[in-house]
Every structure is written in structure tokens, then in C-alpha cells.
Length: 133
Figure 1 (tube, rainbow, N blue to C red):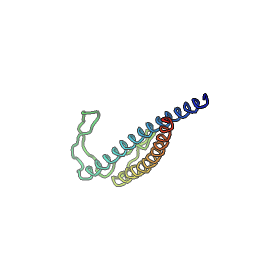
Figure 2: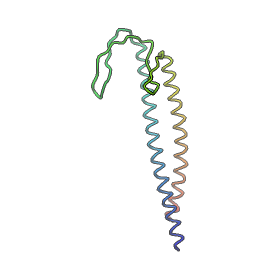
Figure 3: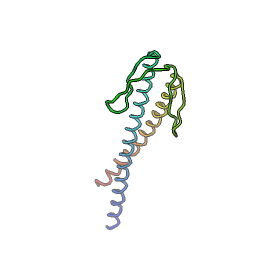
Figure 4: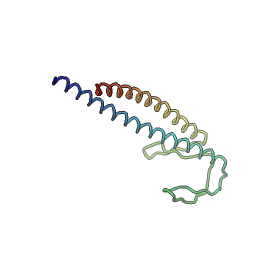
């Protein structure tokens, strides 16, 4: 009889671990969706920039609800942070392509996360039924 108790405890421990992994997957999915949305907004902003003219005034956000006035000097190029305090100048077309590539990469990663989450859910349900017995 003690052996059955240990088995239930092991199953319950695995059940809790799976539940935590599902929560981590959910958090990662949320982050991926937010990052994809940011990239889509960046592409939209670059499309709008393409419709602007050099010398045109604009408002640039510096904090939530706080803006600074600026003037567009060059509508042909943007500067992209590539990491490590390094920036690179790109044409609008290059920048949009880069953003779209990142969106596509995130979509593939999201698909993998969803597949992993589905497998975890199946295991979760299996363990839940074992605990209920």
C-alpha cells in the first residue's frame, strides 16, 4: 500500500511540473505575440515614413504620453540597433525586410511553442486522470 502512495506522489509531482511548463509556454507565447506586434507596428511606421517628406515635423515619443518635436532629415534611411550598442543604417526597404524576417522567425517559433504546449496539455490530462483514479 505504501508503494501506491509513492506512485501517486510521483504522478502528482510530475503533474505539477507539467502545469508549470504549460504556464511558461503561455508566457513565452505572450512575449512572442507582443514582439511580433511591435515589429508589425515598426513596418507600419516605416510605411508612413515613406509617405513623408524631408523637413517635415513629427512628434517622437520619449515616454508614455510624453513627446518631443523633431524634423525628418532623411526619409530614405533608418538606423537599426543591431545589439551591443551598435547601430546600422538601412534603407526603408532593407529595414522592412529585416522586420518581416523577424516576424516570420517568430511565427515559426510560435508554431513550435504551440506544438510543445499541445503535447504538454495531453500529458497534463493523462496525469490528471491518473490522479483522479
